[in-house]
Image 1: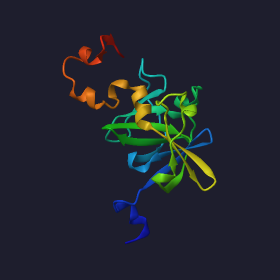
Image 2: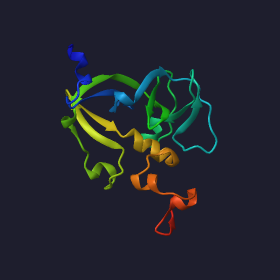
Image 3: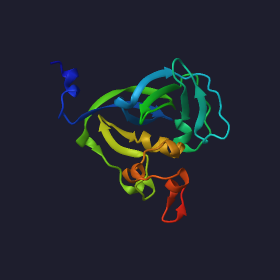
Image 4: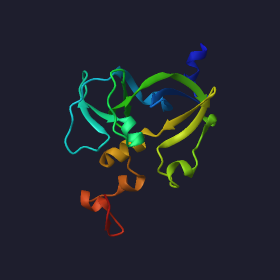
Length: 183
């Protein structure tokens, strides 16, 4: 079996991370979540969307929500560049295109080499968007938690906890926790 096929074997404890940049900072995503990379294109704005959502576009067979990842990560207004890319992802039955500046390549790393960021990187709480930090060569890669980013942008599409999955009743009742309304 070729060395490149080792990830097909169970128990290798390795993961392939696609490296990309936003403002020259290196980030990563599990390649399993990446459907394709494409050149950025014109996006149709959607009124009243989350401020990090640029809008939608339909490159071929599927409508994609486009998230301005540079804006989401920094809060600074961004001007789409002609060389920007759309990293089209697929996870949790959602297809989302994230605007990135470059794609650097794919690295295979051991899961044990991915370190959980401490609470200082996530404002002292468990809700940070850095899922892990990995060192590849001389570079540190921040592996982003795209599920958390998607849940922040569109909470109604986010992951449900086991308790929420089993809870019946109306939408209003599902949002009520300990007698208080939650958004």
